[in-house]
Picture (tube, rainbow, N blue to C red):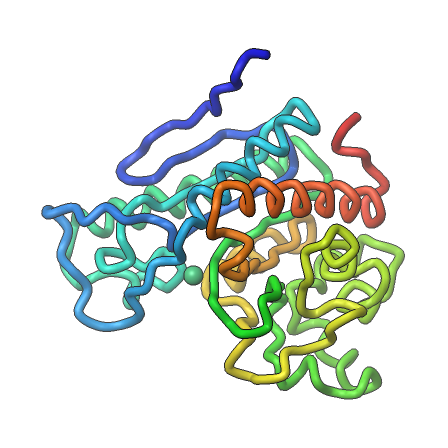
Length: 275
Ligand SMILES: [Zn+2]
C-alpha cells in the first residue's frame, strides 16, 4: 500500500490544504512555533490546545481514506503566546506588529478562500473550528453559539434562540427542526455518541453539569457562521484530552468524527460524500 502525502501549502506559519470536499477545518490553537520576529502577547489566554494540529491532520487523512478526497484545512503553527487565531485582531496579536498581522491575515485569508471555493463549487458546506479542552466530563463539546445556560432551558424557551445559533443556517436547509438539529436524533452530537465519541449537546447529554465546562464557540465560529450563512454551517469542536492524547486515540477519534460528518451530511443535505 502506498502512503498518501497530504497536499499541504505552507504560507507564513499557516499550513493550508486546498481541499475538494465541502468540508472546512481550522485549528487555531495547536501550534508551538515561538518565532523571534513576532512580538510575544502580553494579555489574553496563552494555552496550547495540545495535539489539535495532529488530530486535524489525522481527520484530513481519514477523510481521504474514506472518500478519496480532501477537506479544506487551515492550521496555525505559531504558538498562542505569539498569536491567538480565534480572536479579533485587537486581541489576537500585540499592537503595531506587522509580522504578527501578516501571519494573522494569512490564516484568515486561507479560511476565507476555502469558504469562497466551497460556496462556488458546492451547494452546502460544513465548517469545524477544532480545539481541545480538559474538562472532567471527557466529552466533545459542540459549540453552536448558545451558552450552557441556554442549553439548560426548557425546549419551548430554547427554541426561541434558533436565530442566535450557528445552526440557523442548517435549519433553513434541512427538513429537521432546530431542536432535533441541536440535541435530537439527527443532531451531530447524537451521531457522534453513536460512533463512540460522547458529545454535548446530544440526546444523551443535553448540557454540561458545570457551566464552566462548556465552550459555546468563539470568534471563528461567530464570524464564519455569518460569512457562511446560509450555505455553510459553523460548529466549534472542543475535543476532550483523551481523544487527542495518543496517536491511537487520535486515529480512533478521527474515524468516529469522519464517520459522523459523512452521516450528518447525508441526513441533512441528502448527499453522499463517499460517492
Ligand atoms: Zn482553543
